Amino acid sequence: MAKSDLLDRANQFIFSTGLNDGASKLCRANMKYGLAQFHLIQEKYGFEPKATFITSPDETISRNAFRWNSGIGYGGRLNWGSGNEKIVFLNVKPNCCGILVGGLDEPVDPYNLITQIDKIKNMNLFHDGIELNWDFGISNHFINCFETKNLSDYNLPPYIFLIHGSALEYRDDNHGIGLYVDVSKTLKESAREEKTKFGSQFILLDSEAKEFFEYSKKALEFSTKKREIIANHLFGDEFKIICNQPHQFLKDYNNMYLGSNCTDTKS
Image (tube, rainbow, N blue to C red; front, top):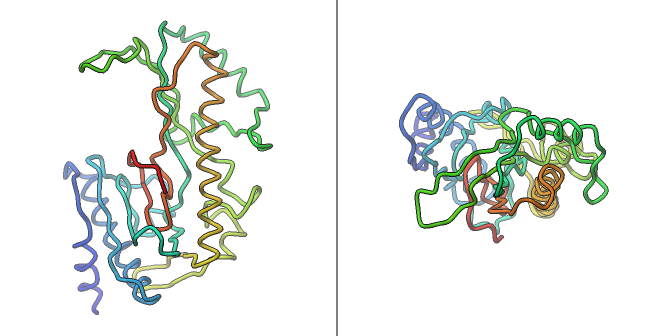
């Protein structure tokens, strides 16, 4: 097929719910190049070329240059199979990012909160023998507190805080195979680089795909627990967890959530 035909085919597998603003248009324009690569690689290995991107209303560009240059946008679910097909595309770069939402009965004094954050940043905190790396101020990660306005019958606490962060500790190969193919030497050496008309994608197949997926599940659990540990050190026993959900992770072998909420976390 000609390049134009491959791009037209890829465009048919983008299902957008975006606002059609500039970021939305850039996301879709870039994503067709990524999907075209996925389709070619799927065909090469005997899979149906049906990789699909279903966007969320805030579809946008990716902050990560490697991911963006691989033809991958942000804000949605990227699917390339039933969930059980042992092929993983590594350029999606799962970082197991998520948000913990906690409820408080009393307002937080900003000075005390900042003081406590400074103390925590100078502490050595561990989970499963791995030291926590403070990333709640990098890129779009944050800790925020808000007063609640209840606009529905669901009775939320009067104050809410958000902790947004990822498993920075698992990106390289210090604790296993690594999550980021452009950071982990071990992961890059295990992967197959597939060069297409539109660029290269790194993939894992069969047992290597299984090893990576199991590692990513460990990273996801670590990321979830990390946010809880930070919340406990910031607020003690004075809060309750409303939710602690990931939005940037590999759900199974063939589904990647890219900055999009997933309510079904069962693999």
